[in-house]
Length: 337
Image (cartoon, rainbow, N blue to C red):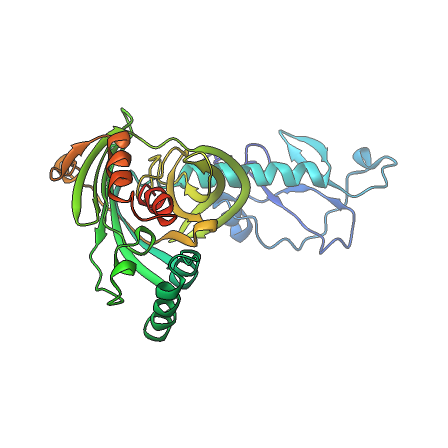
């Protein structure tokens, strides 16, 4: 019975990789194995193991070479392969095998945690007009609340459609203005259709609900070589700019081939599992991904709220905050995150 050529020429039927020891000799090669016995069984099973047998180079192949090379027999010919080339071949083969066995998640749910450095956010809001009120409020907040405010949410996805849903949290403070600050709350339900570039967001601000329909958010991304694992998925870093000036750092995975993410973040060649706004002291990171098949009706846009688009929503906020001084511009900007 013919044995399968599993290494495209590096492991050929009836041959086993031989090794004289850890670089004790410069010469290595593949040598014939008997058809029976344990050695033949190992070769037939595709195992490159027991690399212990010294095998001298045939005189006809030795010549005057002085460097360390790998000698392999391929279709009854002895080939000389430099170590670097052989390493590249083996690494390419390993990558190919990983790709063949990779699993891609196209439907499921993702659990996110949103962390905000509340102390830093509140401190930034202090100015000469409100210092007498906000500074004592910050000190009181520090005594009764942790530095980082953690809010949870879920992102459901299937067929390039996503639905971001916040999980209601208990209030962390009885200070009114803190409870309505956009960076310290999470009230948006956001549907995104990444096939046609449409998003429908139910945004709750200052006690009112708005149903904002518009195109998906545009972010100028630049992909980097930095990687990290998030919730069991291998991710790559991308840096971006949104809303003209907001710096964004995101980590996405191609193992979930859906170009979405938490809230309104999107536009990368895979699902965003981590995103941070460093200058805003704010970040979202996935804690769990559940790979499950969702029906199409599980991903539908929200229905309630005053209908408008992004421009109309901004105008509503500016009108509501017109008497709030320097805080107004920051409030409007943060409400768009």
